[in-house]
Amino acid sequence: MFKFSFPNKLDKKVPLLLPVCSDQIKTVPKKLLNGLSKKQTEAVRAALRKGVPDDGLLPVYSGDATVLLMLLAKEKSLKTRSVRETSSQIFSAARKYKIDGLTILTGTLNDELVRAMREGIVIGSYEYNDWKGVIHKEKAKKQTTLKSVSFTGNKTAGESKRLLQLQKSIALTKDLINCPPKTATPSYLEKKSREIARQLKDVKVTVFKEKELKKMGCNGILAVGRGSHEESRLIILEYKGGGKKAPIALVGKGVTFDTGGYSLKPSQYLESMKQDLGGAATALGGFYAIASLGVKKNVIAVIPTVENSINSHAYRPDDVIKMYNGVTVEVTNTDAEGRIILGDALAYTAKKYNPRAMIDMATLTGACAYAVGNDFTAALGTNNDLISKIIESGKEVDEPVWELPLHERYKKELDSPIADIVNCSKLKAGTVEGGLFLQHFVPKEINWCHLDIASVAFDESKKQATGRNVRMLLNFVKKY
Ligand code: BES
Ligand code: MN
Ligand code: ZN
Image (cartoon, rainbow, N blue to C red; front, side, top):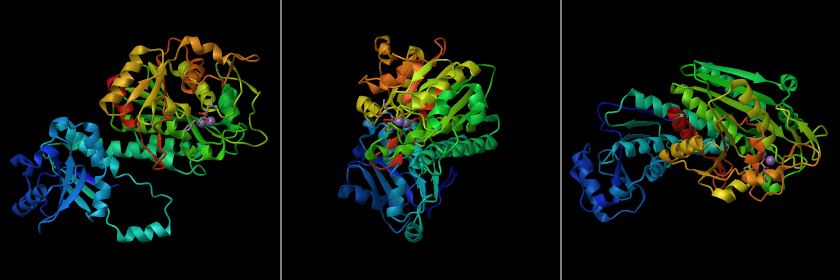
């Protein structure tokens, strides 16, 4: 991760990044070139005259410091999202053109777009190299890495702090998801949660181990975790940001690896199942952002965490589990495990904290990506006000959320011949089924929303976590 600063004066030796809109190429506005030397100005004009590719980054050499042109769409049609996305490529472009420090000019972009550009640069600097070995290290020696970025403009220390905390929070979420499952276990999540609590003031952490979970009656968490050598946990972080109001609860599914259990996943579906702690990672990243930026709200993060694996103690199809709130569940599929651990966590959180809003996040169903595609998070619940505020918060930061029907008429699908409900039925709308199951563990009076993030948490093409929804959560909590 690089250092960034907001200096008062430009350092003439440091390369510059200049955002240029496609309609500024033919007739270059004077204002655009503010801050460039004479040589740089001429070279940039010449490069623009020559014609440049539509979208991307282009270095211009003049004898003075390099100017990296960032080419954007027409000024009037610029969207924060595309500016953020193009800006996220600056880190790798700097590597390509051997630039180790950059001063960012704002060009003619408005404040909102400048903000998006800064976020894009900072977030795009993320790399996950913890497991790279000697081969990578040899290569890295020869490469240039962008180490410092200074932003011009009249921004203050406040912006610098915001960017740093945002960078750390999103990296926390991504690191947890990217980390191999042999390391990222339930006790690892405990360790990370304790680190967060140690680092931040006004944060308290409580961890329930198996012995306590048994006393409490969290038999759902225990059942799913029983097939693994790794001990299960229920982790609770509490942040007191202000006032006496009840907290907002962020509940995250923390299945550190999902084999499917005895309802074993076929091999192509096992790959990437380290992402199944994505809900927990997002709740922790969001919580970290909120607490480290000192948002004046009370917030808790609740993480039920297990490994869903197989041994002779593992739970089986046909088992019946008596959950924390007394509801009994017939296990019809051990691969529908997330809803079981969340059931206990939701019921416990509602009873213990009576939160003013309870949002759970989970990589709950493969069906989610079929329902909403890879750019949307699915939202389900019965509280229209809460759901519309979440959708609005997502829209504002370009992390879109779409509502699916959590409708009464499907409820009977979960009827069980032996227990209160089954954990898996034949409803084709798998994401809706997951939401209907969870609803049994949330008292009616609680403002609750379930977010299925299985569609967005992990980028299958890059095999990398996305960090999605951390910014959405921060934005939501600030306003709610
Ligand atoms: N963790 C999976 C869902 C998942 C799939 C997340 C792909 C990310 C990418 C979840 O525990 C699961 O196995 N769900 C089953 C539910 C079914 C058994 C009702 C699924 O989606 O097949
Ligand atoms: Mn599963
Ligand atoms: Zn799972």
